[in-house]
Length: 113
Image (cartoon, rainbow, N blue to C red; front, side):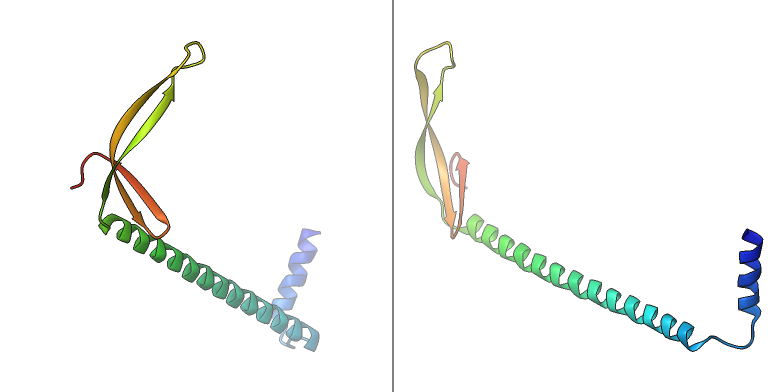
């Protein structure tokens, strides 16, 4: 079986008569489909990369604006329960630096630099 397939393939390679019209059109169709799929994949990847770059740039710009904004000194109160076996809760006041910029908010414990 394998020998017959190999002989048929060898005769096809050695044959000098050329390909039939159907074989040529099929080969062209396969080449065109491959090129179309490649172009589609390249365009899709370029689109995704551009969208990702825009989102990353916007995120970096917001983070930079947040870190360069002026800080407000605020105090917050943290309430922590004592646990299931103990009634009541502990409260503690913590001094924080509070930064805001557009949609971002950042808290930092301690004094401003």
